[in-house]
Image (spheres, rainbow, N blue to C red):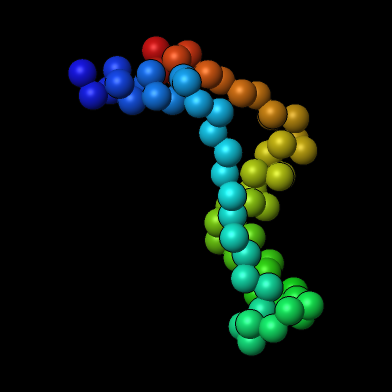
Length: 68
């Protein structure tokens, strides 16, 4: 039923993820608040994904294999 349709949809796509990072609280161009950016990268899991990938776990599993 619904799970099968979802799996078909996932298998027919190539997922991409976009993370929007706010560079500063003043909404001014060209200004980067390092602490603000770092906090956002930590909270949305980007730093953890980079750490895991660097550790040698860039394994990708298809949705079909994962669902088994």
